[in-house]
Every structure is written in C-alpha cells, then in structure tokens.
Image 1 (spheres, rainbow, N blue to C red):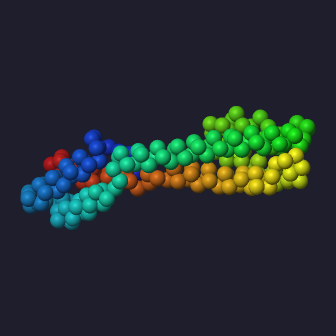
Image 2: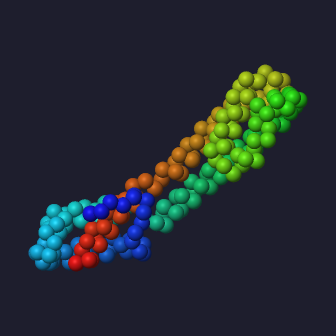
Image 3: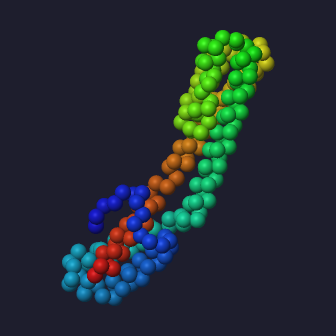
Length: 193
C-alpha cells in the first residue's frame, strides 16, 4: 500500500458511504479470495484480515457532521476568548493611562499593539503575556488608580484559557482521516482488480 499524508482525503462521498462500500468489497473479496490471490499474490487472507481491521477502526471514527459541529463550538469558544481578551486589554489601557502619562510606559502595556493582535490568535497570546508582565511590575501604581489585584490576575487566567482553547481546536482532527484513508486504500486495491 502506498503512503499518503494523514490529512489528505482521496475518496469521494461521505465517510459512511465509503465504509459501507468497503464492507461490500470485503464480502466480495471473501467470496472470491482464491481468484484475487491468483491474480495478485499480495491480496490474500492476511490482506483480507487487515482490510477488515481497517474497516472496523474506521467505523469507530466520528462522522463528518459531528466533527464539523465540534469544530464550530471550539472556534466559537476561541472567538469568545479573543473578544474577552480585547475587553481586558481595553480595561488595562484605561487604568494604565490613569496611572502613567509617559508614552514609553504605555508602550510597555501594549499601547498600539491591539489592532495587530485583534485578529491574530498568536499575537493575542503575546499581548496577554506582555499585559501580565507589565501589570505585575506596576501593580502598586495600578492599584492606586483602582485596577484591582483580581483584575490583574484575570489576565493570566484569560491567557491560559485562550492557549488551551487554541491547542484543543488545533489538535481535534489528528488520526481521523488516517483511519478512513487506510480503508480507502484497501478498497482501491480490490476495485482495481
């Protein structure tokens, strides 16, 4: 069997249709195994068993609609955390401007960085990291103008939540396509004959 990248999907139609077709081909292969083996010696009882194992593994894979719904939920969670991060940035900048008038000091709090981070999740994480550091270093001055310790600690919590949400969203599909692809490759070996 040739190897494909795990993310490539080479078969037409839905996952369930492909698996159902593979089961039919597996049955045909069992009925005429001697003929298949006579034509191609690699298509034998071992191949048939591997084919069945691949089909059974693919049957346990989450279907397309469920994956799309789960992905949509994860994207919505990340987007909500991005919005919360933007609101937190605005809060920090409000109190930083009350506490400091120096442009250099405000730049340490990320003044001017938000437009670039607003639509870029990695930059937003970096911005939250900078906010956390700047607020930690200037806690007393910020507390003096009304920015509480709880509000400062929310930055770290928000940063962790956003990082976890991004990691979860980006790792959701690993392995899924690879299992389905193995079934398709076995099926194509049988269909060609």
